[in-house]
Length: 136
Image 1: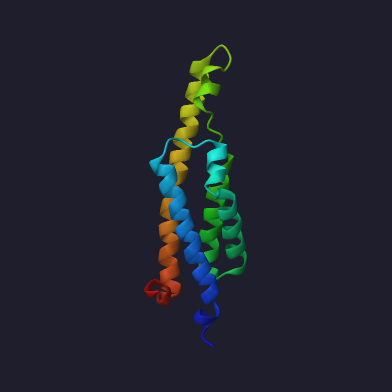
Image 2: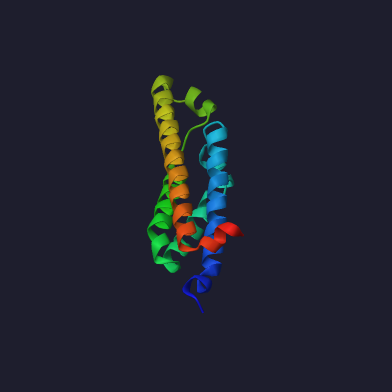
């Protein structure tokens, strides 16, 4: 049996993971900044866990990119952008809280852009490793 056919299920699962990642990226780009609960609802943790599983057991060429995607998902999950009511009601210096919120939103945007690029790089590797996949 051909090596690529042996890995078929892994390649299909990786393709589905990348599709899910693209949906997460799209939602994060098209909506207002997401707080920790919103990000959880997008399924970032299951995405991260699946990326780690695939990185640990999958094709050698995909291990590092999948690990990078898992790391980016973890970083996104850690960002806690406060909602507007928390900023307004924060201490005697809401401008400081607002500045911190802007910093977190900017960090979130950078991570989303990096995640989108890494998804595309990973998809290119997937297509090189298993060209049949792109025809299905």
